Image (spheres, rainbow, N blue to C red):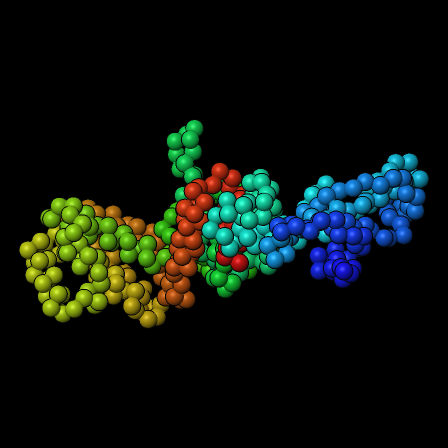
Length: 396
């Protein structure tokens, strides 16, 4: 026979079991009631001992050993003499107006995280798709609220595509903020312009902006403008990978003029690879090919010079080498090299910040990969808030 210790297992200690109504192969139903002496009016907070009448409610609880559990609770309605109105007694663990326990809603979240898709969760728990989605994202929101820390000292910022706007035909982007010390996504905001980001209430509500010391971004003037205003005491670091990508793009452009756009051509990867990582006999073959294509050879020389620049140790030495490199680029007759030199000069201070702390945006790019994986698994999101909750919870 069941004892009232069973209600402790259900995390409903206020309830007392009256009897077991039905026990089948797939489900069980229990009759319970609350035994408190009085209740407090939710409107005026006055104690009430007068029972007005009773109502029965059927609540679904988390399954036990794959058996569905239903709780038939006899609730008392008390009469408040001050308000002169009846009210129904509350039960801890069951929210007002809900027909499921908090334990069951947490179980929905656990199933949604561990099952391959939400359809399996619905079949396993015998629930509707609306309850599944509502309970899951509601629990995600409660978990995210537990993150109360201030901004970390090092923040990575990057964007990724969220969805395509059907009316305007343009892509909408989301900006991701990554905390390097905690190794997690701190916030996700819709949009990437300073106006959109500054108008984001959740982003503005996070305290401690003045404590951020380093912000790593790609070569985006938009993010540079935002980071300078949003994190006033932070040093902005230009991501090393994005700087090198500028050189690689020009190498690819000139290589296509010589070989055409054939991705299977082995010289394509060899030119983009760092010379120090190539075997000596392969390096000699690449040099012979470059001798026959002087335009590509010049661009390749500056790309390798930038690779050597990032292997330097010390800020002072790096400053001297960068000045020497940009002076050599100024003498080039290639228009792309001159344009690239202007970009390097504009981002000179941000590029040199790398030699103070060695920070890159690799961790942020990794979380961007996680974000895209979540989008693919869900076949896209219509609701940005649901997408935000799932990504932040995934990286907690």
